[in-house]
Length: 178
Image (cartoon, rainbow, N blue to C red):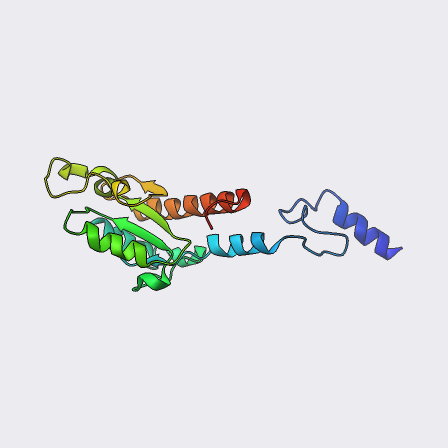
């Protein structure tokens, strides 16, 4: 009798959690290995430390205690491209700095993503007429998320990383970028 009443409580109106659709009769979660790996990859980006201009200060502030990027699992900024899977281009990219940035991107292992942070990285910013500034990072790298602003606030970077997380999860569900 008690077993039936407990089961009725689990199936009642109080069981509207996100996992209730995945739980079987014995509270076992049914999923695939691909879904678990996609969840783990989208919840643990390892960004490459690459600050080009003033937007880098806002990127560094995001890792500090006030904004605490660690609560999302993204706090491990890597000094080596071989250990990173996310390149945050924060600031003005010049033609002289473009080949080293491209080399860093090429040294990153697959799956890799790019965030363009700031109006200078997106389209040249106030230096758009300069002969030495690349008119947008998307001319040399495939950009996944754009974060506008001059400089963008740390909250904007956090929002951009959460947007990238949703994009990665959706792509993994469709069988996209591996």
